[in-house]
Image (cartoon, rainbow, N blue to C red; front, side, top):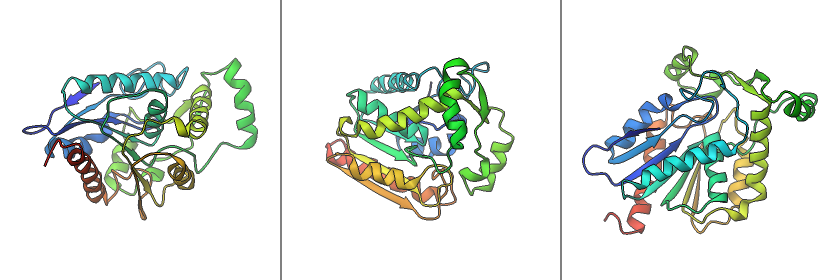
Length: 267
């Protein structure tokens, strides 16, 4: 994991969890926005992604690997003795949800960015059926994800950087897909088990990757004392990379600031 410390006196710590097939370096702009606004940031690359490994790219044995990793990042954030917020994008949002369904953590709030609670495009029915058997006999078999840079964002600069990014994963294993599918199912089945923390869920209105109807369905059903939902109509999947990203960031920062005021940490 890596740490970036705030300019001046810090208000809180933001633990960020990236999405599938990507890595922490893609979050340079967002890290700098939080840091210059008075927040420490902790982030790492998830198992099988980014700089964590070259031989096991796009593969996990269990979704729990992600959950345990993010829990370690949160434990590191506690050392600052400041309020901690968890921000998860896409699969990182799903990981954050599953973590808070299984654990009770000392966090001040949760921010979900286009959380992966359903996919716009799923594998053909035959391949999906075959994946159950392949998951037993050849779980590490990697197939093309079917996702493209153009589906993620309208931002031409980000698209260009991603095309030349050697750390960006294009193939995922059968086991990875089955574990992701199981985690999505559990997010709905255990919806009532989630820790009651203030939550902001933000969703791209023109998301080409995550099914926004499933996100809204989950949001409407989750029994939290305080929750907000914000849809950004023109945005694709990566709302913090879109042309509107400064407005998206300010909205997220306002949520964090309001929670800090609510707990009496800042006036």
